Length: 203
Length: 337
Image (cartoon, rainbow over all chains, first blue to last red; front, top):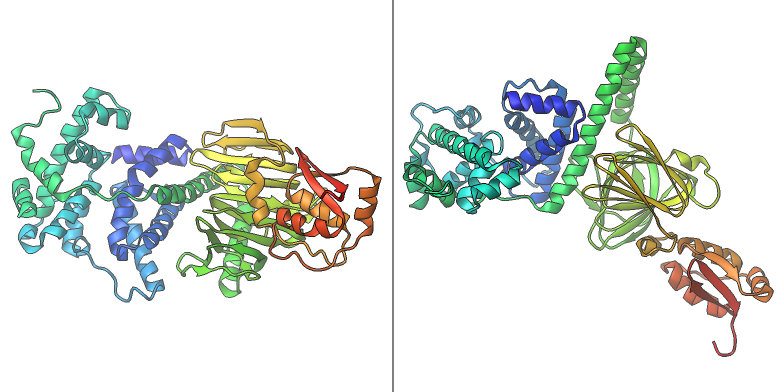
């Protein structure tokens, strides 16, 4: 969070590299956040994400670091999506995702374990898969990207370091932190061990 | 075990990641388009913040109050009155759409439609359009272009390329036209120029006259006819020469507003066509010049590009044209023609 406050300070000071890091670190995640909430309409997602980030830029000085920057943007994005759907009457009913349900939303935003909430048993494989991806998007820094590059796309630590502009040892350390963060988040959101989530997805 | 091998403790996580699959990546062109718009907002926010700090430092609270009052008045006016018409569509080719505000749908843009403040225009991969602005300024949009009409005389280029033709001669009231880009604000000094946004900067090429660019870093850059400059996102400016008939101008003549030939002399028609094609009219001899001044045209060349219009009109006048470098050579037709 301190890193994000620092990033915002640098952006407010007009530092181009800070803006580049912000955009590269948030755009794709925000797009994935908006897309399913807008019925999978890419043009609608583009409009809403652009409006969200535009508003984010105008309000940047008000970001206090009380939540993660991505969480802050998601709050703006939710309102923009509702406004968009209200204005476009063809989407008569709002899309409600499981991660928008109040109890689960609180869990995802804080990534802390809920009480008596067994998501693995409640929802199907597709929803659980999407939620895993949402968890990846909620991880700090570039953890989600690094995990995906390593374990889904099969890139080496060296290649990941090059992509992130860091050395081999730093990339290895980042991956270790990312694994821990992902495991904690997964268990927090699903209330189950990673192995149980994997079993649900493979069922 | 190498650092890239997986140990058993990671197996459950790997299984979850692989089973969930790759997250969906946004299309690159979509990302680029949003990036430009957001970067522009960011630069504007930074500039506003700097100005505000300067204002506070200088203790000009009265001025700030005036600005706030003006903003309130402007907002009130914008809310209660219909948006001002600032241009007309003079030509549409292919898919071109328009929308007012963020939350209304895109509509096809038709020729002769009015264009209002806050409207956004977007051309498709095969689409182009020309707008007619006050003071006889022609604004043309290349394909894959997005612009937003901010106010009368102020347009934001979000993606793609625009061409501005403010008419021959020195600037008139048209100097007020500003084209905002993420890399700076363009003003022209009686000119023909184009601005094209790329991933790393904006390229501005001047065909006639001159332009000024106030970069987002606060510097003012000027480019004259025959010059193009690339302003990068880091503020680096590189310059090179460009001829007025370079291939990169050719798209602009495909959406050139028509010329009404009825009652005009061939000389006047040639001046229009030559300017659209970035050439100078040169007569091969006095006879050709005299004939061009004497013959008056009738009919219409509506829907024809300048090149097509030349090919259609000149054979009926006893004259012929030939493009030689920067010259459009006009001579009297011979029997062999």
